[in-house]
Image 1 (cartoon, rainbow, N blue to C red):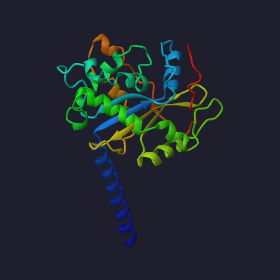
Image 2: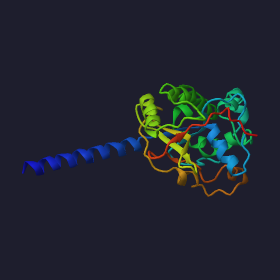
Image 3: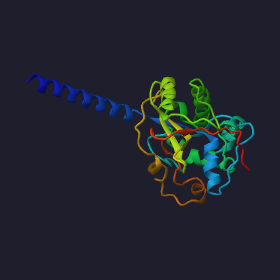
Image 4: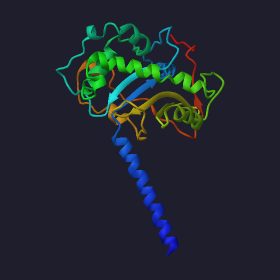
Length: 253
């Protein structure tokens, strides 16, 4: 009888933990995503696609700031670069378009994601949206977080995914979504980090499922959107494969 009671207690604890995790995820308001530019460009060059890392970029760059409440939310709220003109020098540095389309990348991210941020007071204007992304990038120094744990870009070393995940968990208090690109030699390249945030823009546990479907969910046919709308090369990193963290000094033409 006691054994049955203990088993029931364990089941209740497991159910409570799962319920708590589901609640944590439903509280996610926005996802802040950074990418390692060298991994991104190596993948693009492997498919004969243009990709250039500016000489002054030696750090993780912004991919996007993505509210969870939808995509392409307000076509009547068009991107206007003049509203963020004082941010442009910083955006060119920390949110560069590695494909070389200039401000089209920011326009795409605004149309798809920024127009959905109006319900969040800290991002309810175009200026606030881009400024908040820059602020988050400043506060979430991924290069430093990893180097503090001895994980630095290297041509020689590979790393255990568990150590990388531990570094981020130590910094954020929760596990972000860490994504890689699998290589042919049974290795994987560190590529992208998604940090889930609540309405207060504090880190919260992410649900570890693929975002590929999300990235392809729009049914828009416009040329501007098709520039960026494509299958993501990133997938959740595997515990079973060593992780390559390629140095940006490996510049490619």
